[in-house]
Image (cartoon, helix red, strand yellow):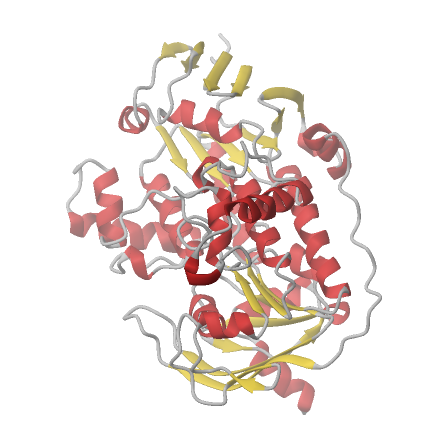
Length: 507
């Protein structure tokens, strides 16, 4: 007898007001298969995964697990059936510790102490740096994703859904995670793998379903397909290459020297003798695994933290180390944080009103708002950056991750900054939207803006940047021209190994 598919979806349909999120979607996942689901932002992938995990109820269609029809009412029932999921947007309680969050998800089958020990064992096994005793509010976005991955793996699922699981890992750790996933697959666990990294999908997955506009646009074996073929299935074309770098770099816009600062959080990372420069007309990247001081550095550079030593941060020649965000914006600094909802945008506010977080052109005398001007500005950003939204008053939380990111990046670029700092510019963004965002960042550089990009996507940094720094344990490496860098070298520097290399070169 042939073994029944682990998961079967037949004609799954989900409607929202004005949107057909899933249009008669059918999907089949074999036992032990690593099955990719690809599609641009807004293609319906997230809705489909939420239906499988019981977060959303379908309007029509049938779901079968191991050959038997099931109606998954909620995530608790999904976990009882052997389905686990790691969301792109996390579901953690900020005031609880890592262990307490995981313990809640296990429905009290183990003591808190046993859960703490299990997390430590699992984290070591998978090469994920997770401290079970840390409160979640003290974790960066990347560290929270590691918690979600470990939490899902502790349930020993039959079907594991992973949404962008490698964005927080070094190239070496990605390969280790892949080895673990392949081992899980050989043990019979089926994996639904959502990623926008086509090279990863082709290297790891044995089947692929591509979605576009809420429908299945193709099914293929990714091992036999090229990146160009997968891109065409996803967005109907290949993303255009970035234009060449034509403009020469100019004066120093951001100059950081002697920046040493203890962490404000008990579990944070202290900054140690940070030195970096960004010139007009260049893109400088900072690579590194999340949790090595990037959050603390961004807080200091953006002005959220004003405790930096006097003279350690100069913006266009002026000491701004003790100046707040508003003063730095007046000097031309604009900032795109890694957390889109809650920091980059207010979830319940419409897009037009979200412009007011960093743009003040529509504010008139005595604080009156020119609503017509505000809506016109929002409409211009939506049109220019191809944001898919139900108008300028659509709440930020109603947009897909990629479309919200395009809006936030567009909002800051349209302010014509002298310095743009961008954290994780295309995290979880499809290939079409990512190409759009990168092209706009490059155009900004060509117009003479200084750009600083913090990203855990090495391919992105190599494609975008002129120079690279690497951050590890609160320290910053010497800068490295991208033309002279290799993935292997940067991966080693992510572990803090540049000291020996620099000393050896000097000798």
